[in-house]
Length: 184
Ligand code: 5GP
Ligand code: MG
Ligand code: MG
Image (tube, rainbow, N blue to C red; front, side, top):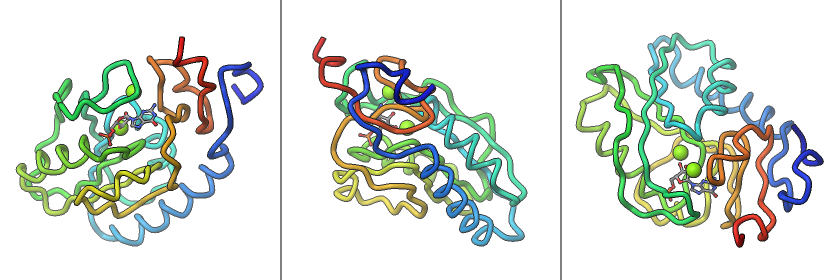
């Protein structure tokens, strides 16, 4: 699927498929260097992080395991509620593990700061965050993000795992929607 298949739903491409691939190569090299000689547990946050988890993990040479967590912070709209619920918890005990949270996007940072304190209470050996995208408001939140793919403007984006009402996750790039899509 490409920008043309999107018809009039898509406004513009913000991060292309090629840009994502190049950046993931760089982040994977950095992560491999940082975790050399250690076992890593990648924690993907469903559903948005599926694409970045698949493409990042396949670039890593570090000895790793993967687990998944599902939390909800958004309804079907475009604004964070600030309320986080665990829909699916991890299968793995985090005690003494080197944990890397893999996220699609950090917007308000509310979900992430909740997640970090939740996972920290399980006493991992280390806990870091990798995100494909970060929006400007995330800077206000007191959470250190070690690996960042791209800074994006304060617009609602879709594609590469990110949805609007569960659609557009399969786009291989990140883009913005035409206003008519969410204005009904
Ligand atoms: P936060 O709590 O940082 O505001 O947002 C957390 C979650 O909201 C993200 O993991 C993502 O699922 C969703 N989200 C935030 N911004 C966007 C966006 O621009 N587009 C989409 N599709 N989801 C977003
Ligand atoms: Mg997410
Ligand atoms: Mg969503």
